Length: 135
Ligand code: HEM
Image (tube, rainbow, N blue to C red; front, side, top):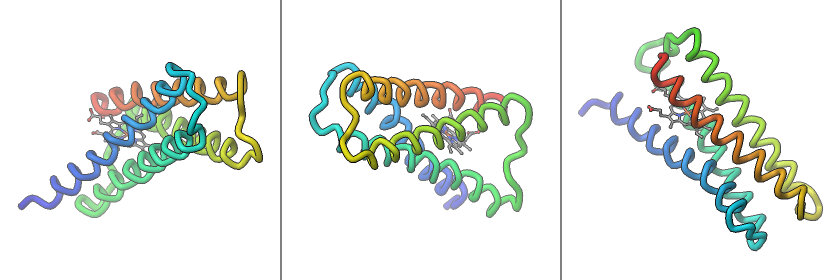
């Protein structure tokens, strides 16, 4: 049993499903224009971003554990990773602020929040491809 591959694979499973959630939830909300269960969809999206941050960090920790060093990346790969981290933190804060508002945003303001979340997810997913092939 190769433990390193197993841990990487399981981390990737979480990371892949997190990616599905952060991309699909805002698109679902924008396409259906469905304000029902708005808070629930916001929580789902927040969990997706939390999974991305946790599993993304775990990739680094697994590398530290097995190789005693972080992955040796530079150039475009560093830019891509930074883009993903900025997107994740921005989305997380935006959702947390939206959930803390006494009344949930409605109308144009809500649409703008969901549009921003969709763009952040799509940019992060695009950056993932560059991180993968430039590292
Ligand atoms: C704090 C945020 C994040 C960190 C630290 C992070 C980190 C990582 C790392 C280290 C890898 C492995 C790269 C490799 O195989 O060389 C990875 C892969 C991946 N990440 Fe992230 N990530 C983050 C957020 C995201 C987000 C928000 C998405 C999608 C919306 C995403 C989608 C992916 C995908 C699809 C892969 C697999 C790429 C492939 O092997 O083809 N990540 N991520």
